[in-house]
Image (cartoon, rainbow, N blue to C red; front, top):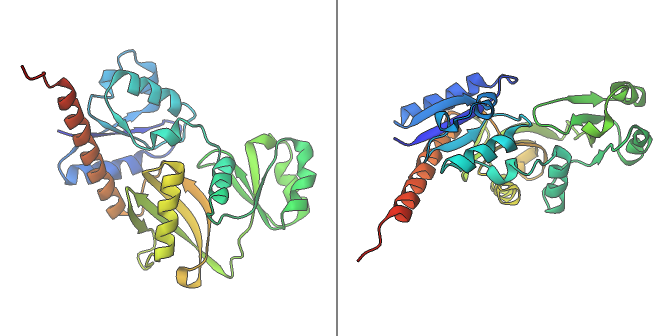
Length: 271
């Protein structure tokens, strides 16, 4: 039976999300297991977790993910979803910069290499701004005035953050979109995804080498204008049963490809 292996962390609250994906797999008759990244890294025999032919989905933003991927791929013939992105240790600011350079509309943003750089940030960006952690699923703080900005940054390691200009909320509304191997769905059941947004999401997929991700996008009236404010390479797909179903099918097809490749490799030469 083909299997999807979901890896989560004990330090993050994603078990419920993993169980929703598990249910989607069970509904189409494929095996699914949930393991903790801490266990995969600590146990000597990794085959207790990652079997040959499985598809691995990291539902965690733990810093140990690259090491875990290395252990799995050295031991088992497995496919890791979003592998190239996950092993690259890409920060959120650098990811947004790559998107901007490739023509994706993202808000203006500035890194904070040192605390002395704070003075230059507000010279480049207009208030209000968002102070964002370089790590996924972490700090996001809005600062309306100068004093609030300095107060929020006081005592923080500035290099762990970047600052992003706020989108005009009167002209845009926020949407969460899910992308799974070309399939696109929205948290908002009433949103009809415009072709423009479909093109944007497919562009993000190719650029960042992500087969599965979620994106927070401010959409203008009619869906013709937008700003992408966040891309999550390890989404739980909480608000879309259809996206979870597509992930299960994607895992099934990927596992089948591993099996065919394995059988072809092991096939004896004709005499």
